Length: 289
Image 1 (cartoon, rainbow, N blue to C red):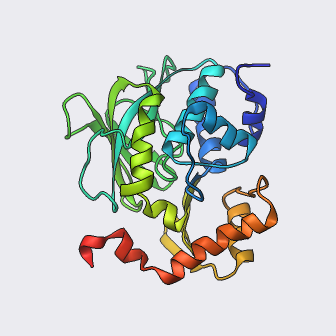
Image 2: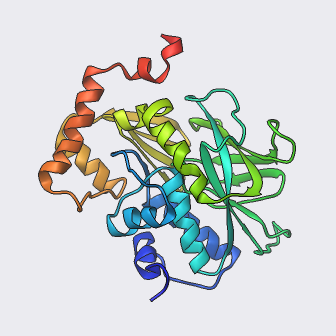
């Protein structure tokens, strides 16, 4: 038995163990973003990598960047990868101006995996945003195509020495800035508490669920289900508990099996109530209304 239940984690991802390589790392990253969603269906109290492992592997849940990248880091370490975590920040519709690597997000890097397209052997990973790159990007300035989406890696404008990933224009995030210095995952606990209870409480009010697929991403906000891909965004409303819980299970892999049936329906009732009685656009963009 390993320090973590590697077999159970890999079962969640639908992959088997293999020797570290650039190709295997890409396979693990793609499996993680497809099968373990970004989600805020509840307000967790802990975000340590160990607590995140329990959430992801034992309960079959997802989480936010701190959960997802933290747990994935432990898995990669156990599989023999040279991996580190880095403070980051996301520019998006919610934060329309570049925020720099302010620690409200995190990313991972893996080193020592040389490839013809990446002779330096360093890679950028992020399984914690619900959108963005499907497979690792070289930590090397350049423009990279993944399916219908284009990403650019370049030096950050926010601080000398930092890095920037520009997202595809069809995505809701404009990009991510991150610091090259490794950090301890423990430093994000206070940041998470502040974000979850104040600046980003809207994510927990409406319930935000996102997961990658090979040609884009699926997104559920409140009772609005969207798919973003080559042809842009298509959206439909979920009007019943059966539709909502069915989407969680069939699209996002969130069966909520650790909850009794009445508690699963409480999830629907809570977000349906908030979606139908509040003004999402006003909550999301208070300065624009």
